[in-house]
Image 1 (spheres, rainbow, N blue to C red):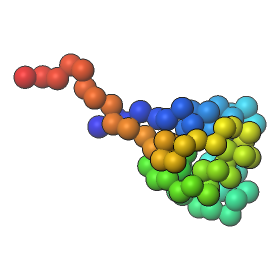
Image 2 (tube, rainbow, N blue to C red; image 1 turned 90 degrees about the vertical axis):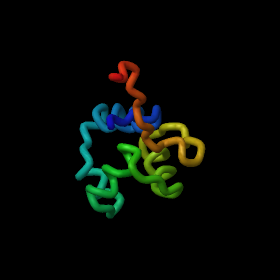
Image 3 (cartoon, rainbow, N blue to C red; image 1 turned 60 degrees about the vertical axis):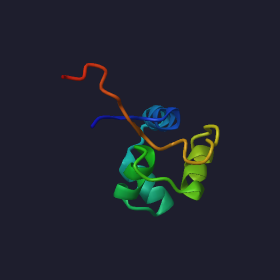
Image 4 (spheres, one colour; image 1 turned 180 degrees about the horizontal axis):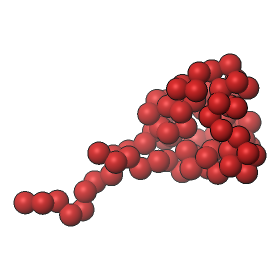
Length: 80
């Protein structure tokens, strides 16, 4: 099922583009794995400290706890 990214995830992705950075750049800067960074940014996992660190680094408002997790998109055209 398709996931809907949080506003925080979208803001981080826009900031990454503005600063010409990719997942690997962030992983190297924070000494994290690219898979971990991807999970955080795409809302598959949530840990308060790295989310806060990314928010501060990109000058984005620190989000409420767990609000960065992606949510499943509901299918509006369900087949009967």
